[in-house]
Length: 373
Image (cartoon, rainbow, N blue to C red; front, side, top):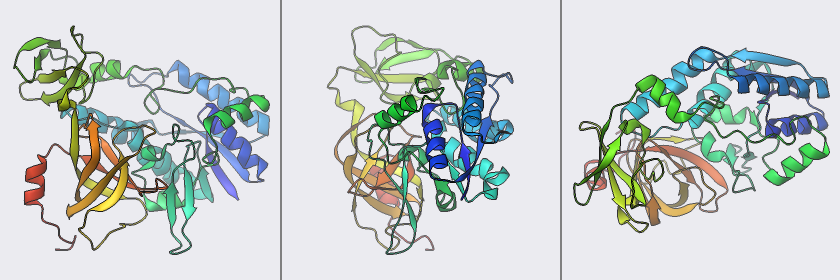
């Protein structure tokens, strides 16, 4: 098969390329180039590209650079800035996969090939009962990246291939060392998709500036300190508040008054909740309960983490749902995504955006009804 392999310069995509070549596929390599937010190149990106060239030379494969700078800033970073300006918590990596890696790249070059391969820790499975393709979790729970893929479309998933999705990270690293790949000992990237070494707070500050305001203890109304802008803080955050006598957790924000609310102590219940309201639900392959409004058993994640949380999911009408968790959930941040999985933790079904709605009002005013009602 003819495979378009997205390569980043990291060890995961390099081992993915090795496996594709080993399996006898006709592989072409592609590096997606994005400029930094001041329009200049990022030195880490130049290092990435040099690694890509070394991998291409090692396997005798063609390497092409695809410039998606304009598309990236319009579809991913404008979304991130708009979201934080509204006092919400974005997830640029999810949007990057949806719009850039499996979106604009597919439209620009990926359509020429049988599949587009990436170094994600995820798998695809075809259900013999319905013949449909599903997004399946990786066996390495720490590295599983299905949550970052939870907004891609069925068409995108059907054209995707994840060559290392069945391997634990330790095995990928071992293979890279054994094969003497040039990036075998290179550290994994920790930044936002394509931002490289740019610090997230520096990025936000460059575009939104600073707007000092009070940090208030929610129980007493007492001012404890001052923040430099509510957009630097997210619900559940502990570090970076600059307060003594902690720990302190961000439990609320008022963007009108430019106030950040905190609660103190490791055991503060204000940082936890069991009810999570979702809007803009997106099912990757199909709606698993198109005609039902019962509380369906699921597991979910509300952030990138290895653990799944048991819960029920109830449809309230149109694209609105509510999660009732079996245990208290820390740091429920509006704007983030809750990713929905089957109870056996095997299939990623899709995701919804966590809303700021009061759960009682949300339930009362959204009776369960079909989309066409």
